[in-house]
Length: 68
Image (cartoon, rainbow, N blue to C red; front, side, top):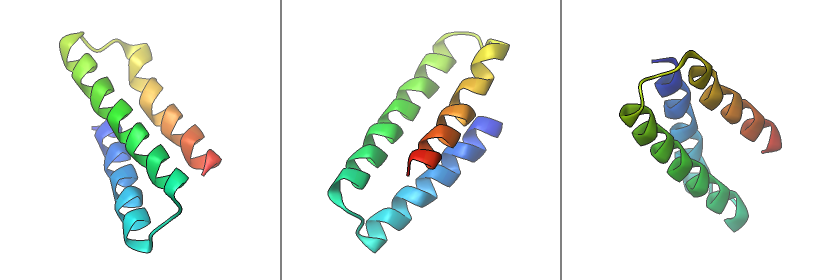
């Protein structure tokens, strides 16, 4: 649920970015990150969730948001 919450927030940022027409590199980063998130979700469904993995995605999002 925690991971989904962060993913949902990032989706809103992406939509806002598209509406406000950010520069192209920003949009590309957005779509790459969404793709990575989707791959991560699929992998997590195939492998039983390990406690260390549950911290992986939120931390990645925090780092990515700082870069933006």
